Amino acid sequence: MIDTPVVAALDMYVEPDCVRQAGRGFIDEVCRRLGVRRCAPAAAELAVQWRQPNLLFAQACGYPLVTQLQGQVAVLAVPSYDLADCAPGEHCSLFVAAEGEARRRLDEFRDTRLALNGHDSNSGMNLLRHALAPLGRDAAFFAEVRISGGHVRSLAMVAAGEAELTSVDALTFAYLQRHAPERLAGLRVLGRSAPSPALPLITSLRWSATQRRELFEALNLTLVDCPELARTLALKSFLPAGEEYYRILLDYERQAEGWGYPHLR
Image (cartoon, rainbow, N blue to C red; front, side, top):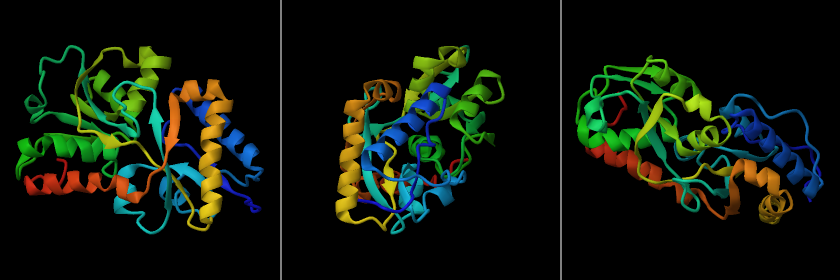
């Protein structure tokens, strides 16, 4: 039993708004089931949020997990989604261009503009870098990399002609496709990245193994008891996982470095 106020957040997927609301509802139900009290909202800045000592759970990006958070958090679970391009416990990146774009292959986008959510993103940067590395080889691939701040904004930039290509999380694309397809108008999927572990649920190191086990069980029981929330979030289950499950992301990084393309550019 956790008898101290906690914070919890699911801030990696917040669009469309029905997804944001379902995430909040899921958090409320998990906390109710565990009988824990929530205090102030989790920090808005993700790097701070993930390190909060009273963090019950939050969803993190896999790449910062293995490059910035080692030894500072515990991996609680990996989600399994009922969506295309998402095998159990996995997701991938989708490479997206404008519907009228004449280029059809990734290698044809050399010297174009990329819309990138952020340089620390697995789906936006790391998986795309891995796909481009055999083509980049010690040279800049893009004429310009434009930072968007988020996947949905990246998609909007491509649709508006402000960039020719972007790499987005398959879940972000699928949520829009299901709940707000008009926001994908004028866009098409050019290709897919190598598979990647889905974004982890992390928790504070302060909780005991017994408390983490109770929390893991509560996550899955909440999905069973709240089918509407599970359906909106396209969540089938949470699977056990540890930090080692995410080391393949460092393998992708090392492969890109070995090909002479250490930086997405």
